Amino acid sequence: MNISKAVEAIFNKYLPSPFTIAVLLTIVTIFLALLFTKPDSIGFVGYTVDILQYWEKGIWSSSLLEFAYQMMLILVLGHVLVLSKPISNLIMKITRYCNNTATSAAIVACLTMLVAFFNWGLGLIFGALLARKVAEHAYSNNIKLNYPIIGASGYMGMMVWHGGISGSAPIKINEVGHLSSIMKNTSSLEIVSQIPSAINFNQTIFNSSNLIIFSSIVVVITGLFYLLGKRSEPTEINLPEYKMHHEEEIIISKADKLDNSKILARAFGALIIVAFFCQYIDDIKVLKITPNLINFLMLGLGIVLHGSFKKFTNAIGESISDISGILIQFPLYFGIMGIMSSSGMVTQVSNFFVSISTATTLPLVTFFSAGLVNIFVPSGGGQWVIQGPIIIESALKLGVPLEKVIMALAYGDQITNMLQPFWALPLLGITKLKAKEILPYTLIAMFVGSLIYIIGILLF
Image 1 (cartoon, rainbow, N blue to C red):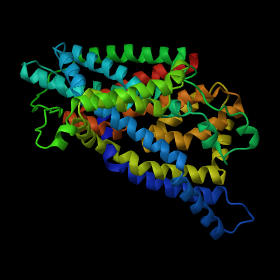
Image 2: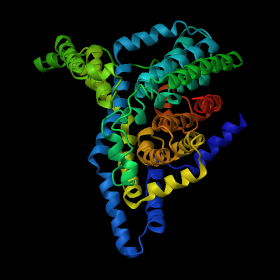
Image 3: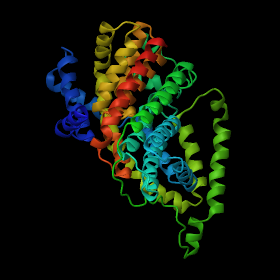
Image 4: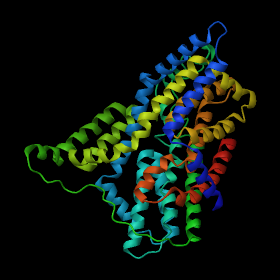
């Protein structure tokens, strides 16, 4: 596994924190805008002021800040659902079937990918907790396992999430007006006039091509981890029990009774679910799945499954640390987008894409460039804000269906999560594994998954 050790060494030595990368990308974007987009009629100092104003407006774009909050809720509420007692009990039942490395790795990988297809935050934490509980089950029952393989299999949801229901790009283009909003002041009127008001899930997530690609990934990666488990050697496991925080609270005052009331919590949760169906039933019928739809449903389910406001808010408190990266990095990505759109850089970069691509190769170019960008912008939402306008304009100029390049971006973004350790941090914290322990197996999965995605892009 020398390759994985070399990759880990490079990341540790040369790749700074995601926040530092966002700052460096901001500075680079400012200089590039000054070098390549300055009109002759404006002086250098004056245009620098203009660029800084574009940056500031981008940072505080109300529509993009709403997007950031939606993505944070998707992650937090997904984590909250996993911490509920019913899902905790489900995880414990699953571990009974995990009696060797091969079977355990296959079960964890398969279930994690299926859960992540519905919600990436749910899949990320579900996979981590399932891997941890499988290891605890093995330890208490004297079962020999290769724990790093199990941990790596619990991370497989991040290889399919962006092509799933909560994927940042597909779910945002489902909102009426989102495509036009991110292209505003970016392209010519001719380009903007070709942009649809929305692209529904029947063209992206639930399109037969994406479902075939996703199914192929699930089957092949599940089989891959079964084979890896078959050929593995057991590792030492010594883990204390991971508490999932659903113990009964001690009730002292009347206020405590309200906080811990099962009737009140479940009634309010049920009210949210009723309101959900009243508001979104027509959208569901036409596969118009939006972030607000997903989050409203998870909010109601979270309260119902936890059974009291106290347990629900305790779970929120535990989950809130997940969003620190999104909270502080997204505004910087929005600022970068503000500079690129207002200065005309989006058009320049899209013209470059058009010059090196054809209608056939643009989706492949998008896939590989998205994989590269994800290493430096480890957030599907942040990447969509920066790269989305570029691929939209490029696709319209070459006559490529927008849904095809958007899904190619989603595939490229998610596949290099197997290389980029940022989103593995919650899993590593829960499993107590190290990045170097799971990296050899996630890299193998990345190469195999990339092949499937490339074939899928070419065929469909």
